[in-house]
Image (spheres, rainbow, N blue to C red):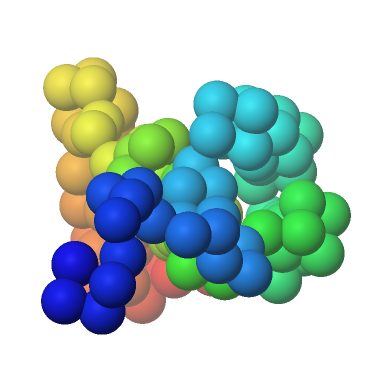
Length: 102
């Protein structure tokens, strides 16, 4: 108001929208990742036209995925999945210690 403005609404600005995490974009990324879990953020950017930060935010916050050995997997594992991972790790460790790794 000090600058002589009488409107309380913001004027339109150029550039991308701040909120690109729409349901359409989230579903599009979910579909791509479910088809190819080895897809990179750069490939997702190229396919969707979204920024790196937006793609990363959708993957980690909205889809609750994280990158492990070049695959996106759920952050929360079920109890049986967690126990299976522990079993496999123990088996691999004992093989390594006994010299039967390969």
